[in-house]
Amino acid sequence: MVNPVWTGTLTFGMVSLSVRLYSARERHGPVMHQFQRGTSDRIRYKRVNERTGKEVSRDDIVRGARVDEGDGEDYVVLEPQDLESILPARSRAMEIRGFVPRRQVDPLWYAATYFIGPKERAAAKPYRLLCSALERTERLGLATFIMRDREHLVLVGPQQGVLSASTLWWPDEVRDPEDVMPPIAETDLSDSELELAEQLVEAMAADWEPSDYSDAYEERLEELIEAKSKGRTITYEEEEPEERGTVVELTDALRKSLKERKKNGKGTGGKEKGGGATRARAPSPRRAEEPGGAAERTGKRTKKELLKEAGDLEIQGRSKMSRDELAEAVEEARNAPSRAAR
Image (tube, rainbow, N blue to C red):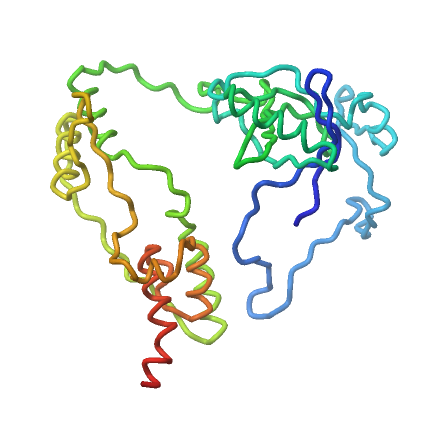
């Protein structure tokens, strides 16, 4: 269990329930510190007074904002009681103002996501009621609430069987493309180019399986740290990317891409039932195995879980392995002592 990041009241209509927010995500990986080169001396940062250079304790630190005063700059210091005095009367409430269609909000607006949990047993029924109603109607509750000295726009909806709260950026915080990048030239797209592009997209269609993906850099970083701690070096033999000739025509590039997908068996090209359009499906990234194979013996464990065990077993090159290759390597490493004994 983790500590809640916010506690308050969730309301919709005349219904209210006490809830807590919990972080829905966390970063993993080795914690890196800073050292002076050639030593094991840590680099530390201190809070110091800019004018005197003396260290300042946390209790003596307040917040402030810069204001322009004529030709110079000045600062307004804000005490904690100043900030508390401007909190709205319902500052501990997440009040749903309306329900919007689930697919109407573009991913661009999403900032962070939290799980919502009922604070007390009596809140379980209205909690389950709201969660089920949102699942059936495919809508999300649009609300506002205050957390960490900021007011947030938030969408409340079902996620993995519980309610979640996804904070959104405010309209004035979302940039327009023309404000940050040069304009894109207008071009004419032919029907044949569009058709080929659609076929290529369908040929590369795949289902979303989060467990099939992992952070390769983090895995290699862990291997590097482990190797250096034992006085070893580690290198990776990278496969050189296949050299491709320069393709001038977009249509040629699309045709060659489709041809390559079919040649490598990565597209089925079969018709859907009912005489629909051709719809190719990419095969699952996981290899098929015989019953009783390594993947079956290691259960439905995720690639990250297998990577951790592979690290415990000191299996080399694990960061380059697929999930099934990891399962086989873990199985072999487990059985190595028993085979040696025989």
